[in-house]
Image (cartoon, rainbow, N blue to C red; front, side, top):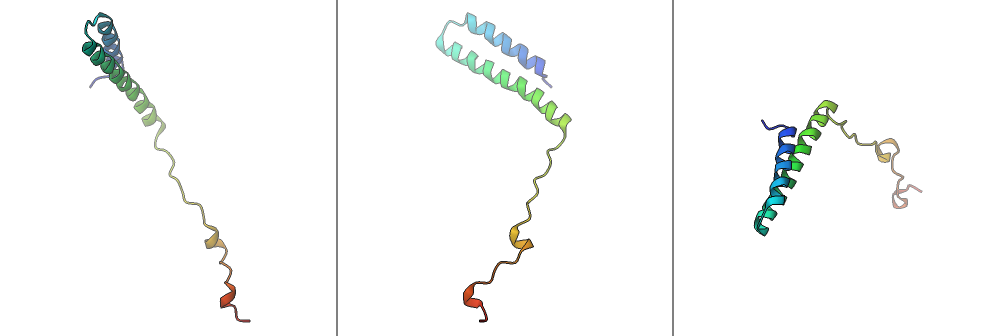
Length: 80
């Protein structure tokens, strides 16, 4: 499995090749490769941090006001 350091090294190599590129197509390919390797290197570090932190707490629904207080009866149902 490729590690974060491997992706960072590939990104640095892509930058060196970018400096030596002669055509616009080659420059575009190397810029994209550099960006992809940088994202992959950051993703590995972020995934390790998330795994160490554990799962996020679950979101619990708040109690609605209707469950604690009955709704007032409309006037057209009143017994007056």
